[in-house]
Structure formats: C-alpha cells, structure tokens
Length: 101
Image (cartoon, rainbow, N blue to C red; front, side):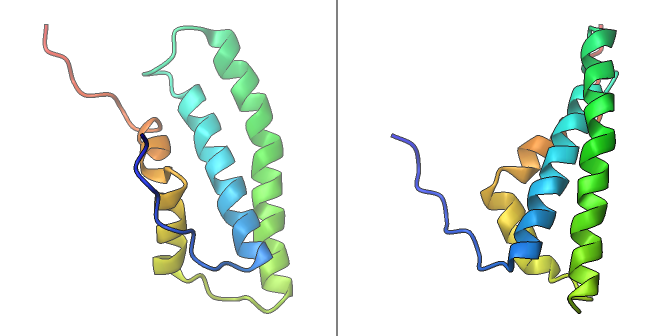
C-alpha cells in the first residue's frame, strides 16, 4: 500500500499551470541530460519537445504577470512541487553519483 501523500496546497489556476509546465520542462531536461542518456535520438526528441514546453512555461508566467500575480509564493509552490515528486524529477537533471572504478 502506498503512503498517503499530503494534499496539494491551494493554487491559482495560473500557479498550477506554472508548476505543471515547470515539471514538464524538468522531465525533458532529465531526458536530455547526456550523463544519463545512451541514445542521441531520445535526447534529440526531448530537446525538440523542450522548445514547446519552454514556450508554455513562459506563457504561464506571462499570464500570471498580466493578471497582477507579480509575486511567486516560494514556500507554497515548493510544497506543491514536493507533492508532485519534483525532487526526484529534478534530480535527473543533475550529474549521477561519481562511480570510481
């Protein structure tokens, strides 16, 4: 049985969109990471998709700004990222542990 996750904090629709597009971008960056890939084609496909996701991320931030949401509430957004497994997903962007032969 899986442990029960904490509830997602209350977010505006624009904040939810920001979190979703950010995690989409992080996932793609993890797939592109050359230290964790063996196939150029998979990285190429992820890089092509990243262009679209980066545009969607920009649009989410622009919409927030246009609506007067000029501040990001870091603590709340960090809680949302943790609930959505953001730490594990972001870890794929970093270098893997150094393996000494």
